[in-house]
Image (tube, rainbow, N blue to C red):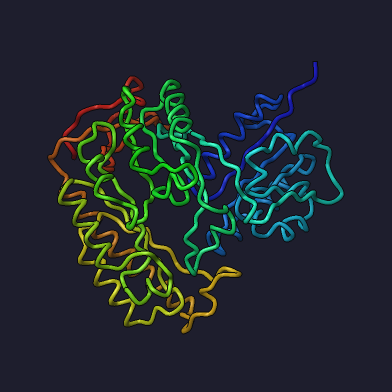
Length: 419
């Protein structure tokens, strides 16, 4: 009997990538491969990359070179957003055997029937207009949380962003097919499922459905499970969605809403689809319906056109909002984006200064939110612990709690008083 080929995954970037790597692993195990355990030598290494910033590209390059150095005899495959956008660059790296684009990685088993080392890399990358493949997928992280990929791609083409070129147009599977994947994950023990996508709230564009209908269908599953909604655009966060979450027994009062800038002028330069007035209305609506909801906000610093005056204006707007935490990103130029035409250009040093300032705002807001929750009831889902001394978990509104380790509590809900 032929020995099973061992495969090692290396994944960078968003939760979507991790869901995809998990799904690829499951598919390849059906086709005669075995995922590597620690200390095993892989026959194949699959590197699933990110390209959201220059730093992400750099991490991708470093990881590729490191895997080639560590496993010189392994068949090296590079896929993901960096591979889609810069396939020729990656193909030129010594030791890389295959480069697969976004369309191709969905059916990766069709491309690795021959895993003999190559003299030069094979490249299979469709252009972004041909990216149409989609499968709903669910993966587990190393704790208790599962990530359900419900949507991929984006039709927004914001001026600073390359994601539509890396992942194609917005698309999804029908609700009926998505529900089956969620039900299977629950059957296998999932207690918390995070709905993920590139533009999650745009679900339904390719099937004539919508995100509200999806969450209603998930909410109707009779199971001991909790759902979280990952990043959702403010213009897509409707009152019907908020009402469903507020009344739901399954959906957590936890929102991640990208703002990117608190200045209307900068939002216009970015070609975002809302104003600060609309954004503020959404935040206050969430708090009106769910006073203890956790609200995370994406914010970008130093993008082209963001003068010091506009930055201060944006910072003051953020300070005025009852949000719980900021996810602060430093702008980096991306090739072939419209933002490259915008002036003035903010020096990188100044961008980082602004990032640090907003990180301090975030720290204050998170401390204030945690303090506001002390003494209130919460339901924690406890996670596995490596040191076996203490264990951590999160309440439905994302307050981290710690207790003494108890193996019987792992992946179990517990009613507690927040400390």
